[in-house]
Amino acid sequence: MQKKIRRPGTALRTPRVTQVRHGASAFPTSAAKRRYFTILLVMVVASAAFGFGLLAWNNPAPYGSSGFWRIAEMRTTNVIIMAVVAFCQAMATVSFQTVTNNRIITPSIMGFESLYVAIQTSTVYLLGAAGLIAFSGTPQFLFQISVMVTFALLLYGWLLSGKYGNMQVMLLVGIIIGGGLGSVSTFMQRLLSPSEFDLLSARLFGSVTNAEAGYLPIAIPLCLVAGAALWFNARRLNLVSLGRDSTVNLGLNHRFETIKVLFLVSILMAISTALVGPMTFLGFLVATLAYQFADTYDHRFVFPMAFFTGFVVLTGAYFVMNHVFYAQGVVGIIIELVGGSVFLYVILRKGRL
Amino acid sequence: MITLTDVAKSYNSEVSIGPVNLQLPAGGITALVGPNGAGKSTLLTMIGRLLGVDRGAIEVGGLDVSTTKSKDLAKIVSILRQENHYVTRLTVRQLVGFGRFPYSKGRLTLLDEEIISRYIDFLDLGGLEDRYLDQLSGGQRQRAYVAMVLCQETDYVLLDEPLNNLDMRHSVQMMQHLHQAARELGRTIIIVLHDINFACHYADRICAVKDGQIAEFGTPEEIMSDDLLSRVFETPVQCINGPRGRLACFY
Image 1 (cartoon, rainbow over the protein chains, first blue to last red):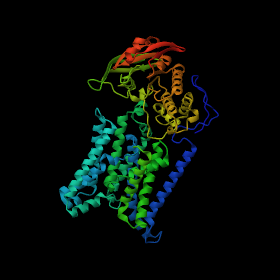
Image 2: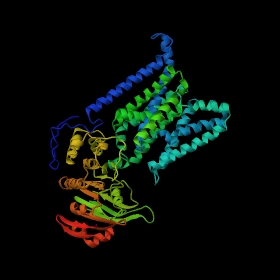
Image 3: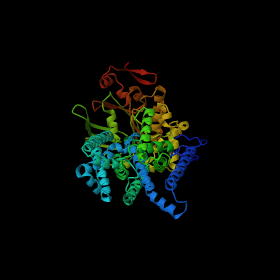
Image 4: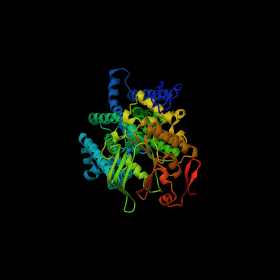
C-alpha cells in the first residue's frame, strides 16, 4: 500500500512525503506478499498433485475408463480423511499456540490424546474385546467428541476463571492430567490379554486407513463450523497473539477470547483424534512450517498456509510410504518421527521455549 | 481526571496496597516515584485495568474502569507494561498499527495508515518502520512500543518505567518525546520513574508512593526537599541547585 501523506494536525510533524510508506497490514513489503502467494501456490499445486497421485498411482485400470474412476472413488475416502485431519490439526494448533502465546506446544499436550487412549483402553479393559467391537460406529464417535469437548471446557473454564487462573497453571495441570491418564491407560494395558492388546493397539496408532468413513458426514460439517468460527475470529486472534496485557489494553476481553478459541480448538482436536487417533507432532510440524512459509502475524494468511502444508505433509507421507517404500502401516510413525525431529531442531536452534 | 477512591489490593497479610485516595488532574506528566515494592506499578496496572482491585473504585475520565466496557476504555486510556515480549514477528509499522485496533478492529483504513505514519514520525522511527522488532536496539524498541500506545490516541497514557534499560541519551530523548506528547498533543501521561532527577525535570506533578500508600503528592518544587526524599526513599538525599533546576544527590 503506497500513498502520500498530507499534514492533518499541527502538533505532529509532517511525514516525509517523498518516502514510500508501506501498509501496516499483513506484509511489510510487496516482495513479502509475492513470496507468500508463490509459496501458497506451490502448496496448492503440491496438494493437488499428491491428492491425485494417491488416487491414480498404481491404479490398474487405464486412465479415463469407468474402472479407473471406480477405484479412484474408493480411494477418495482416504484423501478426504487426510484433508479433514490436516484441516483440524492445522487450525487447532495455530489457534492454540496463539492463545497460549507459545510456539512450541500443541493441543495434544492438554491431555486430549491421553483422554482418547484412556477411553479406548478402559473400553477394552472393562468390556473386553467384544465391547470394543460393539463400541464403535457413529454413537461411539459422537460420545468420544462430546467427552473430550466437555473435559476441555471444564478444565479451561475452571482453570482460567479462578482467582489464580492463568495460562501457565492451566498448561501445567493439563500436562499432569494427560500424564496421569496415560499412566492409568498403561496400567490397564498391562492387565489385558495379548489378543485384546493387539486389537487395542491397532486403534491407538494414528492411521488414516483405520478411520471409519461413516463418521465423515458428522465430522466434516462440525469441523467446517469450528474452522469458520476461527476464521472469522482471525483479526482478534492477531491481537491475542500479543499477549494478555496488550489484548486488554486494546479493548478485548482476554479471558472470553481465550475460552472461546480453546473451545473451538477442543472440537477440532476431538474430531481429529476420534477419526485417526493420536498424532502428537503433526500439528506442531504443520504450524511451525506454516509460520516459516507465511512469515506474517495475520492469521487470515497463516490459516490457509497451515492447512495446505498439513495436507501436503499427510498426502506426501502416504504417497511415499505406499508407493516408494511399500510400508503402508507406518505413515503415522514417520510423521511423528519427522515432526519430533523438527521439534528438537526448533528447540535447539532457538535455545528457549 | 483520574480518581482513585479507597482503592485497596492485598496479596497477603504483609503485602497490601491502600486504601489509596488520589486525584490526578488531566494534562501534563505525572510521575510515580518511590522505593522498590512500594506499589507504583501495581497502582498503574490497576488504573489501566490490567489488574482488578479488591476494594474501592477507579475512574478515568469519568468512567469506572471495572464496569465500563473494555473496548470503550481502550479509546480513553492506554497502558504500556515494563516487559513486552511478543511471540509473533512484527515490523515497527505493524506493531504501531495494532494501536489502531480500538477504532479499526483490525481493518486498517487509509486514515489509520496516515495516523500510524504520523506517530512513527513523531517518535523518529521513520527510517526503521519496516525493520522487525528483533532487529532493533533496546532504545529503538522502547520507542516503537511508546509509538503504539500513542497511536491509540487516548487522553490518558500510562507508562510503566519506559526508561528501564535505556542509556542516558535514549532516556533524555524518550522524556522529550513524552513531554512533547503532553504539551502538543494534550495527553495526560502517568509514568513510573525510578530516577527522581528525571521526574523533577520533566514531570508537572510527582506522586511519591511508599508501602502501598501515597506518601506525598505535589509539584517537583514541593517534592524536592532533603527530608521528604530521605524519608520516602529511606536513603540520605541532599537537594542542590543545578544549572538546570534542582538536583537530588544521593550517591
